[in-house]
Length: 282
Image (cartoon, rainbow, N blue to C red; front, side, top):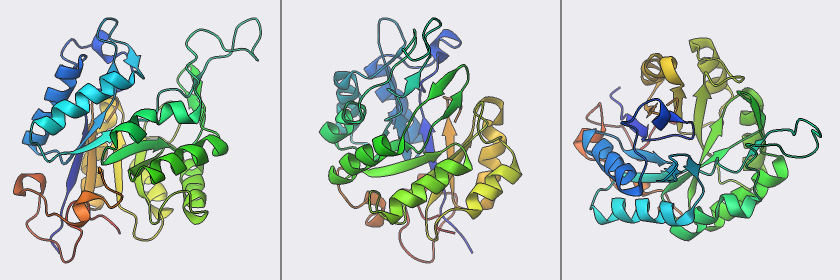
């Protein structure tokens, strides 16, 4: 059976990648142009983080998101826009008093983490489905915060990309689908190789895939040196893969339910049934 393949490209992530590679886009104009170029190269989705143009550090400035989104939309590209909601979840315990946040803490209320999504109404936005140790700090997404964010995203008519870094995150996502906070069947991104979460191995991907709800489209990526091996395994496993430099609709109904992709977006020529933009519901 021939199948459609969807490529998602994160043109910049949340780590200090500009400090390691000056080619990483930083300004809204650079990020938008990288997204447009990725679409021309075959990406169907671009995942957007923004950065402070002066410091190059990750930012939550809504005006930066607006400029990037406006530039992509004005270009005439039909690429699907996926905005992150990850910033605002980091906690670093203080050295003298671990109950108080130390330097590097970014914890924000749920409404602040999704305000750019509610205002700009992209096609998709990420929703990180749990807490974990991430490198030297803690990445906190409590169930109550996720419920509030999920409702705001749902009511804005945006499709959440459910990012799952370990199996517990996937189980929590399924619970929020069952409770109605997230519309069924959910669209998942399996995130592999991040310290200290699910490893980037075929076995890990296969196990997490086995836990997905029936009929859910799913993506997968591996961080850093695991990027291309995991993309290859994901492409072999089924229909949708994700490529990210980070380590990887304006409507309630996703655009791909109604519109076929450009031929350059697909590694196959036909699909037995709609949807054709992101069919990977195996």
